[in-house]
Structures are given as C-alpha cells and as structure tokens.
Image (tube, helix red, strand yellow):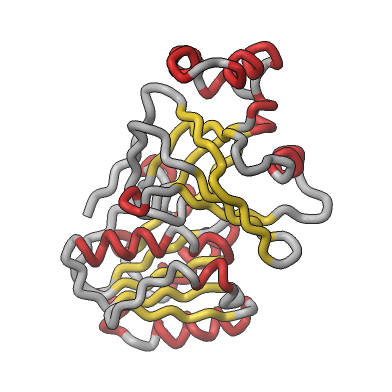
Length: 263
C-alpha cells in the first residue's frame, strides 16, 4: 500500500484544542484540523511557532480576520520561518479522527523550540508547514515493526490503515519503551495485532534475536524500523546481517535517503 506524502500549497495554522501533561516531561497536544488539510495514517508533520516569523508578520496574522489570515498564510513559505522554531513530529491520529494529535518530551532544560512550545496554551495557534509519510508496505502477510519511545505513536494510525486496506497480519509491534499510557492508549485492539514493550536495549535485542530464529518470518515478513538516526542505523544493519532482504525493510524516509540506512 503506497501512502504518499502531501506537500501543502499554503501553510496551515492549527489551534490547540487540548494539552495534557503526563509524568514529568511528556506533553500530548491535540489540534483542531485546519480546513483542507489531509494526511495518511503514520504521517509526520513539520510545524513552526509564531516566534519563527518576523514580529511584524506574526502580529498581522494573530490580529487578522479569517479571510485576511488565509491570504497572509498563502503568501508565506517554510523558508520564512527561523529553523530554530520548527520541528518535525509524528501524528498519532488519522484524518477520520477529526483531530491532530502529537506528543513530545519537554525536559528540564529544553531546546529553544520546546521551551517556547511549552509556554503555548489552549487556543494558541501552531503552523503546519508540511505533512508526509514515506512508508510503502504491502498489507498482506506478516509485519514486524521495531520502534523506540514516542516513535511508536504514529504507528497505531498506520496499522489501522493497513488493516483497512486488507491486511491479514499478523502484525507485531516491538518497542524499546515502558508501556506508558501515552503510548498504549491508541493501541489497535485486533486479534491480528500484538504489542511488546521492552524497557531496556538488552531485552529489546534479545527479543529481536528470538524473532530471527523464525526463518519463515525472516524470509517472508516485512520489517518496519521507526526511530532516531542511530536506532535506525543499528537495527536495519542487524536485520540485514540476519538475512532480511533489503526489499523487506521499510522506513519512513524519502527514497533518496534509503542509501543512508540500507547499504
């Protein structure tokens, strides 16, 4: 199933509907869906804050009526934002959920972006610059997804799309993470789907090694790897070293970046 990314003609502005603080650092934001925005399950989005624009333009947009705001948004582009106030997040929901949800950790000494985002309140607006997903996974047959932390959050929506496209499973989601509420509340409850959580890298490695003992899975399964750069490099190499063919490894990266991870 091919889920191509979407690049918007105009930048969207989405108001914050809700912000939940979980634990000491995790925050989950719910945004209203801007009119005309579309995305697929498993998508990520590039967002920006008002502080990334010139003060004059930011104030114009904030004070504008709906018609004027739309005209202003149509006239700006991603390059108009200071990169320090932009960031990419995974979308936890699907379009049919009528909400855009993403989670992030804001540490005690956060980056400039996260410090500023942490000061935003319900009713404030966040710019959505682009949205895309690069996963291309045929729905039929066994699938194993290897993820780390909040990288799992977008996978729930992607799994739902796979099943609705005729996926017959089984689908195993294996994660380096504690089974915290923010990761489990959107789990797909279906007999074809199973989740496993490992709270450290060693137990995760042992679980992956156990999977590699199933030669049918190695030869016929599809393996999705989602996480940070180092995580992806390590586990894609591990899969390849254990006999998983390159065309059975899938990642949420543009085709031209596959060579960075798959040799």
